[in-house]
Length: 287
Image 1 (cartoon, one colour):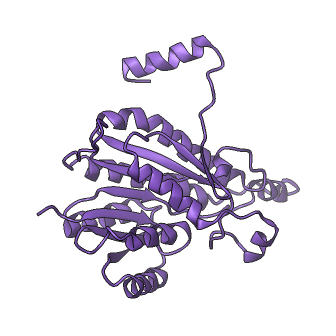
Image 2: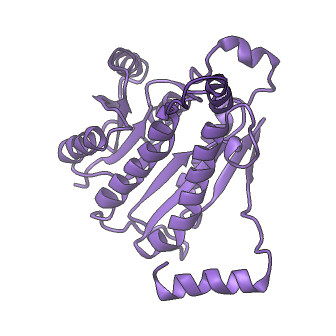
């Protein structure tokens, strides 16, 4: 008898992570016999509360919680190892945990310009949003690569599993009020697009979500959302459904806006020389 599908969702105790957890647990075909969702979150009380609420709401579903600080390699590696041992493996990873801007880079620099030396800026945003995602992706590749490829049918390539990273539309456009946050999300999108061709050879798919404004607890104040045009959680679910159901999708960035999912295309090469050089790097296998 095959083991249940094992799904890991970082930052799964709230926001988009919790929304995706609910989606997987509420799906009629995802019962405790064929799917298990593990929530990884830094907040133990929120994680325990989410697990209890989800088990009550979806009594036939299988869900657990592991305390994890995604900015710590040691914490993530230990959490993934526990999940792999308890569930028999890992099939899907949602590198979703994220935080907002932790320091105003410009204000901090200008504040010390009139006297005294510069002060090192806090980089929690980078630690969580970028390094944390790299750790999740690295661990996802490690464990998913151990799986036997599943036949996708319809002549589509078999797959060992999938990785989906939560970026932001701030990773597609300039975002002056949170430049470090924007830089991390640009980095996540670059990571996904660059890894996809190599992981395709390993039969692992990787994609990204780039949501507009979804009301979550990542914002410093709920008042922020009053002035915004919001995107519902259902749009994130719609994008994930497409990624999960269509094994041909990899290296894609799903921009979530309103009730719409639009695949954002990478920029075109500025000239043929640039295209030739990039393709040669790929052919040579190193840079």
